[in-house]
Length: 549
Image 1: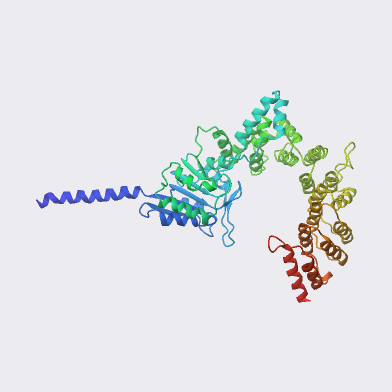
Image 2 (image 1 turned 90 degrees about the vertical axis):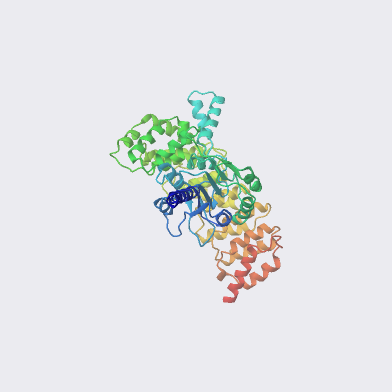
């Protein structure tokens, strides 16, 4: 009898062990990437049954390659929660001064494309992206005017060209939602936010109430109850891209450039294939082409790069799009890329850039952005005199004067400085853009301009813009400071007074009697409906300066 019981006990022991193994196999691993607040992570830790879940924080403070550390430990995640501010497409980041971790989207893409850590996310059922705009459907790029024009130039009817351009925007526009779907390929559920997301201290309690009410978690099914719980933040859900997705081809294109397993020569071959697509497609893929081309080694013995350099048809399409670009900055980027690809030498690149600027110069849409571009391109003076004077048959305006000033014209600079105090808001705007690159270093010049701005009358918004342009200059002469103090006294707008304070707060207080100015400001200031402001900061600094004296 006893002999018959022993096998039974052994069998029971084996069953217990087997059931324990099954129970262990049913445990799920919740991985967290905590870039900013840990509110959501801690809610999961204290709410989910510890017998059913293991928790792994992937970020290791002080270790920049923490993702590699997780791979080395052979972590496999069933659920992933990423908590951090999201800047709209580049990275998850923190606003905490004691934390330096961040998570670049491009690094996520590289890992996903390279399968350098295939086990980490291979069994993911759900991803929680707790940051603003993580699933925004807005495309980061849309087909510009030159795309439609290039299609029409190739023989398409305008209506057909517009439809094709819309399709290209859909394919290449690459919203944040598209990027996350590409990164988390085949994941059944990805939660995130199309716009503003609740901060962790608010999202945590919402998530906790949902879980304590029996909300499902990690099942790989989008939960209507969870979406309802986060309805105020418009939480949405999508799924990872599959091989049958309409955008799978785009993912394959980007992955060939990002995949660490693909040697540079093969990447160059793929780059050449992309460059041989239509000019419209090349323009839409410009951001990626530009990024990846800059990483390819400038190897003169590379057969693939040599074939690109000698491809005259691809070069012609590319240069034509660059010349016709609605956005001159994009045209300039294409000119630089053409040089990288061996299609232009330095002199030819300069000629093309000047041609692009000259074409834009004649546009009625010329504005502060163009001034910024011209001054940036000519930071070292290489484009001085590129236009050879003011072009014929073009009306003068402050934006054109400012562009010429960026290109070294003394007459253009004088006109821009006069436009600053002209009372014209558009003139003040382009002057501000110009002075951010070419500030006034001559004290006599600065004194004259400050006096003119201080005496401005009429539209307060134009004077505010002019004062903001002065704010980057440190005033150090009594005449200029007295003029601004008088302007503060007679100002009829709180915004003007605040803008004057923005100039004075950077001034050299040795040129004035700080105690006297502080008393005058207290007496003359308009009441702020918003509480303490820049005027209070200025008065406090003047008081401190007076105490030191």
